[in-house]
Image (cartoon, rainbow, N blue to C red; front, side, top):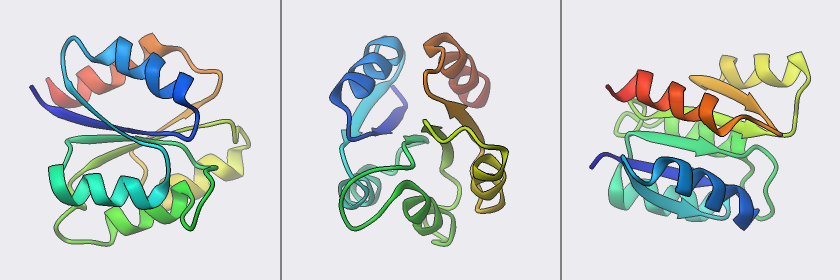
Length: 120
């Protein structure tokens, strides 16, 4: 099964996405930016579902930059899943290379539909 990384500091969000996607994909999880980069380095997931606001050294936009600026990982699809719903936030994420932008509270079915459209 194809690997997907879910990065969010809220366990309930990770659980919701994991349950929704876990039947069809291998789910990897991280709760912060540094953890995300470690998982990406070890497993090279096909898709990263990435929160913007997280505790720790790296926020989601910094993780996005690290993914898209690295020749070894720039092919990974990144969807931001965030409470930051302003148009400027979405525009900034897209400018940095985000492939999709979902605003919390989001529809898990919408995320699943996007993932399937990208991987199938």
